[in-house]
Length: 178
Ligand code: PRP
Image (cartoon, rainbow, N blue to C red; front, side, top):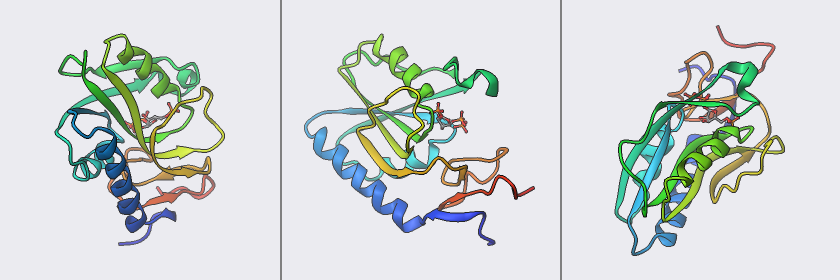
């Protein structure tokens, strides 16, 4: 299959990072039960692969969120399209994301979920864009710090496509695929 864009992180590098994140989480939650909360849609691949690297008992839930369009994305106004199925009070929660960009989605989610009084809440994100978080977000489990380029693959899309690429690549904004 033709390579899309310029590969930034290979399939093997992703696998290594996800395995490391899984080891870190398994060590930190030793003796506890964990609830992984995947943020749809982008997190579906990170969630699936990270889950298989975690050795403590783990349950799963998902949220789907949407920003109110591009213009208001920077305002941090987020709409919940699908809420959690279960209560999280007294649960140890790890939110799983594919990417932290401005940080506004996670800032909103943390505020929203902390009100529900989990025992603890942390973030696992495969990618963190460097230098552009509008609000500092403490990403405890992180795969890669990346430049603020337009990236696709491994859950990340361009016009709905390329989420299934097994690698992460950079698209040239002046030469986007049709
Ligand atoms: C992406 C990503 C995060 C968010 C990060 O989701 O999965 O949820 O953007 O951006 P931020 O840090 O600037 O808030 P997106 O809204 O593209 O939806 P998707 O996962 O369904 O593609």
